[in-house]
Image (cartoon, rainbow, N blue to C red; front, top):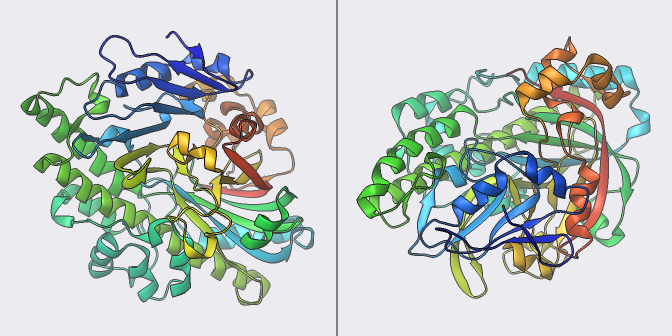
Length: 473
């Protein structure tokens, strides 16, 4: 791939072959060599071949090889272009939610942290295939969730109506229709609300180590030394099955519309075709499921804190800071035009004053939540006006440098222990988590600095993990 320097930390992949537009990748000198280690640039070039794609297709600093569009990819499409399941991803609306507290982290010693972890696991099932523990969440609520998102579980007693102001899209992507969802997807999703899952999903107890923008930090309710809780999960088996189903359907439909697919991972159909419309309707169901799933988990975490401390969430100052989606396609306005923006492993980051910000964050810009690996820092950022060049997008995390298989082979017990230090984790043996160990990921400090240094984002706060709850694959 013939990358051309196009400014500081910015590289252009010029149009060639069947590419319709250029691609752009953001990387600093430390991250640039990592782009040669996988097929992520080739996947960006493939995405640039699709009908209706808008220049440029973008690779974030955490870019790495995925299925179809690389993880860390952003692709905007004209209103008469295509929609692609592989450009959204398997875990539809995998995303992050941050909860703040009034608790000084120094007041929670290791035994208390361990009790909190154990109590959280009592409330929140972790691991692949687990079912939710709330017996009151039956078919009726699941179907309401698919249509209404987080609002449906708020009505069932999980949280406060004000929480909607702190969730991207107010916790609901319009246009959902369960009629576009297969029976297999329906069955996989019906019992999984309120579950964390496995892989890179986590619940993390953190301490705010630094605040960089005091005004924005104050608006977000953050202060140095504070305990925060970060939740990372998505639409579970429901979204995975929807992506699987529609990758097959869109691949089969593409020839009918004269679309030559660069690879099966970018299976797509025109947005306005029956197949494209049905994928959007099904995807929206999974997006709404994920917002509701994180809402239930947050409520259960608050209950776990109350169980351990004997204090109400209100007395502990526990409230939602924000919830962002990572894997989604939605209609947005950029440069005065309406586009369907696919973000796969990327986070929206609107600048202060942008009209699409929630009212509570209109002046500051909403928080962009960027987790690192389970042994490294996470960041809260805000976008700037310059973020318009990325369709107001930022990286969603650190990004892998080792596949799960490679991590299991290469990372030793000593490597794992050294990387985790004093951070508590809930696995009995390091092998259960080694594929998620910090050495499997890029340096979050370099990833964040890449966009900060060119003025696309601003740092607001930095958090470090104290204790991590994860599930097994």
